[in-house]
Length: 400
Ligand code: PMP
Image (cartoon, rainbow, N blue to C red):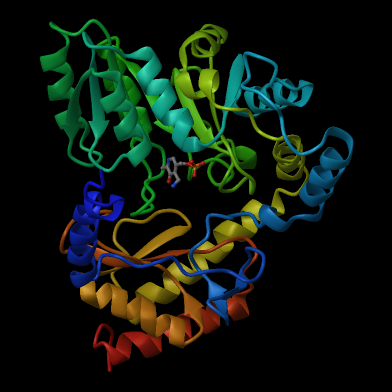
């Protein structure tokens, strides 16, 4: 007997999608026909790329490519199993030792992505009797981990340590454990968490502190060791999460902390337990990336030089770059349509910078987000600034 078709059962999806389309909130992504780089071929056009997280240009570094090629030749392309069964290669452990050394912790554990590192860790260590106190602008993977944990979730206004303290006061009498969690660098505004204050206040209440350094590792601190190193807080942040997908240039995430924390995650973190480990090429390329970080510190210097140069240029034109302190510089324009229009005009003028709208950022705070890398030359940044000037004039965003 033929019932309604499968298509009919999914008709509600089309209704929701057409609503998103009408509000300009659905787009297929632009597509690259070149490697990730300061300049890239995107949707058939050669443009200056101001949207990647390839901060140090390692995604195409010869040393990483060679390490990956060698790993493929010697180890093949797949790891064959989840870590606890038979998917732990010697090089996985080597990478974890390397990360622990880099972060100055006893141990580290690699996950398939920064997303699974965050979500898997929060969900593993907290439960129903616990309270999580979280910055309102924390990454989606932290939010999902909080929900999966079933702990009570309390949100504090962005970087507001006084509000965080009030939530700690309320939580202390009833909570079994309390976790305070923050991004180290916030991905949409490019500002840095007030980690010394967060740590000091959390300590008073015996709370665990977790920082997600996805945008801080390879960017802040000596040799890019991250926000804990940047603030000299070694030994004071129990859980440091990072990603291997941004400045490190490859793919993956990790947790760095005490041996006990890492052993607990080996026993309980579900992405570690139930999802296949990284292929050899990914792991070998990550190992090579840590060598490059030590050997070529000038990459981080270039990243910061470019950051100052570009931010200064945007501000001089009169753009609102918000509270950014890092290579992530938002150009805040307010209305959603204007942000998307600015991004489109920039593309016509040879620059790709993603427009970002609600729900990724609050309504009225739509923006074009720019990220410079160590690979951009000053002349490319000058061209990008010219494009911002032209597009900004067309939209009446900067002086005519
Ligand atoms: N945390 C933050 C703050 C991020 O911006 C991202 C990436 N968008 C992640 C975690 C997830 O990292 P990955 O891309 O390695 O999954």
